[in-house]
Length: 559
Image 1: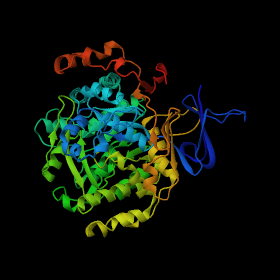
Image 2 (image 1 turned 180 degrees about the vertical axis):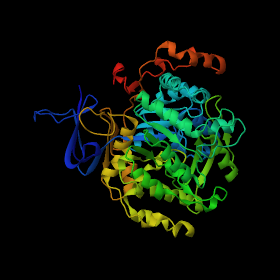
Image 3 (image 1 turned 30 degrees about the horizontal axis):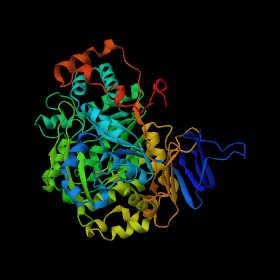
Image 4 (image 1 turned 45 degrees about the vertical axis):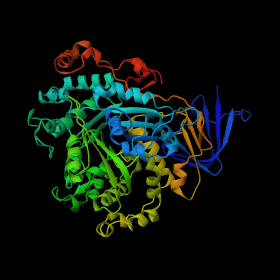
């Protein structure tokens, strides 16, 4: 048995309404516990956190850190490898060397997350047939807990089942696919639209425009999958990447999508990229459409979102939305990859440099911050950059500082093109996030959204994942360099240095297994159409040795 005491710090725990100093956090055998009733009890180690801020470990709800798209991006960006300095590849004691850039290697990804005080990360888009590779990569990431969402919005069997109007069979397939891939939830990207594009018919731009081959619409696809997710009791709601990503005028489509899913649980991904007013034929003239969208979110407490903040600098765009990849490539003239997965999804990958002198990029930067500042309840918002699409997750400290310091925002606005500088609504938004609100959008809220009841707080029974930040007037420096990070009760970042390598867990949703007789149509379709036989498709238990179950049947697996 081990007992750790983190003493004398300012504890920020939004779930329990705690903002208090001095206060101690006690961790016994990897879990947060109440302070010992006997004052004579002594901890095995005491960390003196006087002058420091203590928060739960960070939780990233929407990131791209594993799978075929990330591997393709690593190969596709040799210029990032060439630009690294010698230290980027050097190994820290106990760890392999790795690469940096916008798509770090597996072990580097974990080290960089821990170095920012994040202990949990969720990959937001894995193709079903790529689940095995994704799990191999996640297992290769030490220190952090991880999970992924599996793509279903353009899966051929999903679309065919919806076209036949067989909701019970769709629910069976969603259940089987979640369990077979060992995912945590369902991701929908440009529903029915990517398949329409892959068949050579162009993109679908309206919720009620029918897929040319199957005759179903994005609206039907969204509603059918949302109903299946709700009926199954998957803790994380349907995770929606809507139509017309990144295109002027898409705010109207986003509002239509809000209305379509009203009555269902829904999480809207990288909402910044879906919040543009203007003419689709004139991308240079787009404007913000956030105000009316945020009004709708503020009136619907069951809706959650992550922002997908753009920050200035070089990064890599990777999206399961193949039509958007083509659109961006034609717009920018840059090299790109169209990376399709048979029967399941499509993907576009290209490099991008966001410049504060580019009107569109500057507007995207301001629109993301506008979302953070216009949504009243921080429990409905999760901090994200849609890593690496808007920026690397390594830029999170800069984003936190921008939210807490309106002066810093105004300084940045002053460098933007005049057309943005004079018109952005951000000029008039004086709100500054508190430490409690920062802890909410980076810890408590994303943990709740994912259904991770043991994460994002410091109450008894929570995982012993804790970040200790040294108090600093320079907020970027404060959030960029935690003094201590504790993972499952182990001090893995000790006085700013990585000291200990331990393995994390992989969160998987656990649902009641349907009777074998209900899988007949799934088996027949797989053996007829798919490149992998039905019996060989599911990820075996031994490939996820660190599985940790969440969901309605989670008691069947150990925590």
